[in-house]
Image (tube, rainbow, N blue to C red; front, top):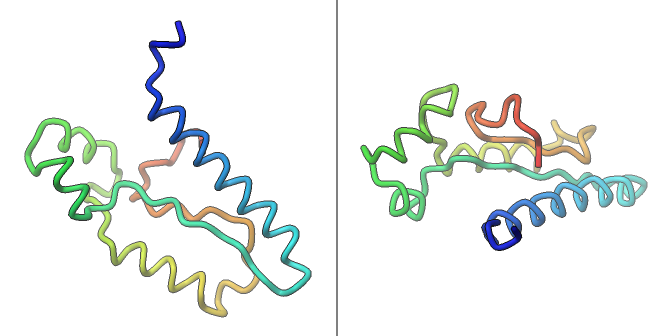
Length: 112
């Protein structure tokens, strides 16, 4: 039954798939102009909003942490480091890629 599906999951999955597709197509179309296009897939990052939604010590929060192979939540600086890399000339031959900054959480999962 359709009513059993959570709308937020549908919206999340479709927007994530759209971003992946847009990244790849933009990389193909803009590469000839010397423009690289990449994206960052963060999860889970310990922002203020994350901490409000996932209080420290709560069973749900501990379960999320158990699914992160490096056994810690990412910090905003981890995303900043990935952005810094993509903005540097060191990434000049990388395009159309998604860099998952997730502590290994997405390893073995379907990328969508």
